[in-house]
Length: 392
Image 1 (spheres, one colour):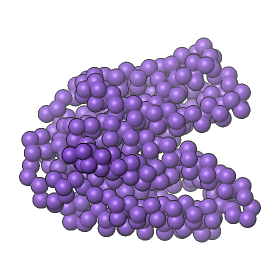
Image 2: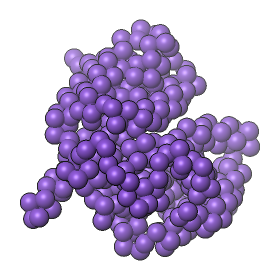
Image 3: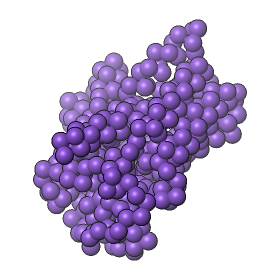
Image 4: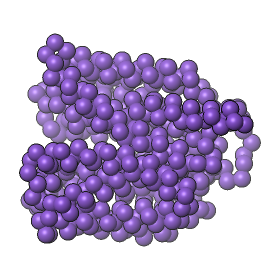
C-alpha cells in the first residue's frame, strides 16, 4: 500500500510535467509577435480562437475513442499533430491556411488530446483527492505560458536562432515529452481494464447531458471562464487606464498568469477541504468581487485597487478548469470521466469569444467602465446559477 501511495504521487508529478509543456499553446500573446508582420491583429486573434476550439474538440475526440484507442496511441497521435503543427506555423510564408491549419487545427487538437488523456489517467489515481489532483495539473498547465513565453521571447531576440527555429524547437520539445509520456502514463490497476462495472454515481455521457445539473454547470462555467478571460485580456491597457505607468503596468500584467496558476491549485484544495457546496459559494464570491473591484478602481481612478481587482480576476479564472474537472468527477463518477469532462470543457468555445466582444465594447464606449459593469452583472448571474446546482 505504501508503494502504491508513493506511486500515485509520481504519476501526479509526471502528469504535471506533461501539462506544463502542453500549456505552451497559451503563450500565444508572445508567440504571435514575429507573425505580426505577416498578419493583422484580427487574423492572429482568430487563430488563437481556432486553437481553443480545436483544443476542446481534440479533448472530446480523445474521450470518444478512449475505450478503443489506448492512451499510448492517443499520446503519440498528439505528439505528431503538435510537432507538425508548430513546423507548419514556422514555414507559413504569409499563408493564412498554413497558420490556421498548423497552430489552430493541428497544434490545438494535439494539445487537447494530451490534456484529456493526462487528466483522465492521473485523476484515476486520486479518487479521494479530486480537487488537489485537478488543481496541481491545471496549475502546471496555466504556468506554462509564463515559462515558455519567456523562453520564446528570449530566443526570438537571438539573430542566429530566430523565430522559425524557436517554433520548431517548441514543437520538438512538445513531441518528445508527449511520446515519453505515452510510455510512462498508466492507469491504476483497478481502472486499467477497458470494461469496468458501473459504480454508484457513474453516469454515462448520454445520460449526463439529459440532466439539468449538467446544463447549469455548463452555463455557470461558461460565465466564469468568459468573465475571467475578458477581464485579464485587457492586462496592461487596463492598468494604464487606472493610473499605472507603462512600465509598472507591464510588470503587473505579468502577474496575471501567476494568479491564474495559483487559483487552480487553491480552488482544488478548497474543494477537498471545504466540500462541494462551500467551494461553489467561494468560487462565485471571488468571481463577483474581482470585476467589482476592477470597476470600483475605474470610478475612483485607484491603480492599487485595479491591481487587486484584475489579479483576482486572473485568480478566479484559474478556478474554472479545476472546479469543472472536480465537479464532473463528483457529480457523474470516474468511469465515464474521459468523455464527460471534455463535453463540459466545451464551455471554452463560447467563452473564447468573450475577449473579442469585451474589446469591441471598450472600443465602442471608449472606456472600461461599461465593460466591467457587464462583467460584474454576469458574475452575479453566475452566482444565481451556481447556487441552484445540485447533484442529481
